[in-house]
Amino acid sequence: MSKTILIGGFGPGISNAVAHKFGAEGFQVALVARNEQRLAAGVKELEGKRVRAAAFPTDLSDPAAVTALVGKVRAALGPITIVHWNAYEGGAGDLLTADVAALRRVFDVPVVCLLAAVQAALPDLKKEKDAAVLAINGGLGYFDDAMDAAAVQWGSMGLGLANAAKHKLLRMLSQKLKGDGIYVGEAMVTGLVKGTAFDSGNGQATIEPSAVADKLWALYRARGAVTATI
Image (cartoon, rainbow, N blue to C red):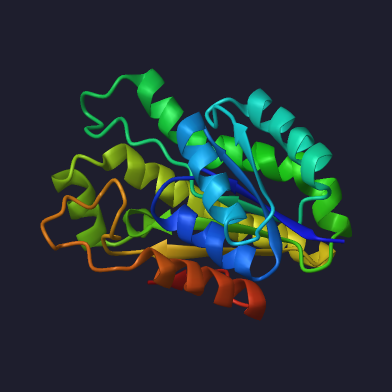
């Protein structure tokens, strides 16, 4: 039976590279985001490479919608082998002026809804061989003076907090799930990636999306360390 990877937060950069990398390695791919046009284009491109793919338009800030999403993916593509999360929210940039509701959403997308996806997919993950929870995270989540200063300078304080919470969540999930044979890993990106929302086109983005996807694949195959920095 084919293995399925659910990609939460599909876009033109890292998650697109992850979709193609895991698709090339034999996975069926469930693409999830709000932008239906982008999802349709992503499915078409993967199918052009003989990868079975399907689109699932979903608001990844809504835990109930995420829970329902897992059931839809299972019904369309079979049991889920990997939950991959690259969804984030960039609000609450200045914590001294941010609306509390905006800050809550910044946490809901990469933390609360990631956990909702894992909980809903857990019956599959416990049964599937080589099951995993894989995530892309940002270096702003590290407890580091330079990263903290960057979060303040770039107006990304809320994102820094959410990344830190996501980092801790993944490490605790690793401890909780390893007894079930479920690997948990994250690629922690500490630079700017070409073709993403953070690429302003001024040459400062130097990391190729494919390099991040390759790092995530290496983590998945090794099934050892929780975090790898790129």
